[in-house]
Length: 100
Ligand SMILES: N=c1c2ncn([C@@H]3O[C@H](COP(=O)(O)OP(=O)(O)OP(=O)(O)O)[C@@H](O)[C@H]3O)c2ncn1[C@@H]1O[C@H](COP(=O)(O)O)[C@@H](O)[C@H]1O
Image 1 (cartoon, helix red, strand yellow):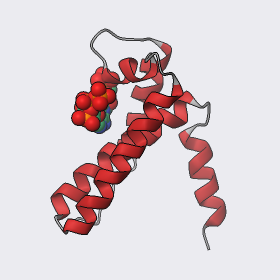
Image 2 (cartoon, protein in one colour):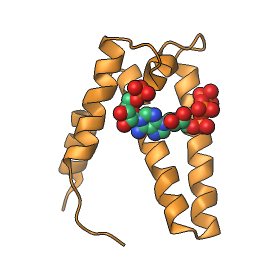
Image 3 (cartoon, helix red, strand yellow):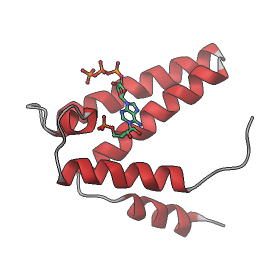
Image 4 (cartoon, helix red, strand yellow):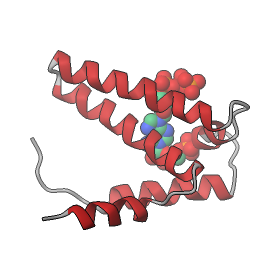
């Protein structure tokens, strides 16, 4: 299990997601998600699917699969946050407040 975390990765992913939201891009999966005719329901549907896949990966006890499914879940949660007007900074601030 790796223990050194590069916090830039999440922040940079957030920036790319915001850029796709502000400047829709041909061929972008994020753009496709945000422009779906189902609106916010599309990304929420994906959050639900990825949550289930994450749970199954944990239950099946395969660490690589769990990491991959967690990455899918993080990504879709970030897109859902952007679509609902809540920023990654808002979430980080909330976590910061809870720190003991
Ligand atoms: N981190 C991710 C990321 N994680 C997961 N996914 C996509 O999420 C999808 C999940 O797989 P599924 O099979 O469930 O979905 P699907 O069948 O492709 O799509 P649906 O029709 O079900 O919506 C895959 O298409 C993955 O490529 C991601 N797509 C993009 N990113 C990042 O987002 C950035 C912007 O990507 P684009 O928007 O594609 O330019 C990239 O730099 C990446 O770093």
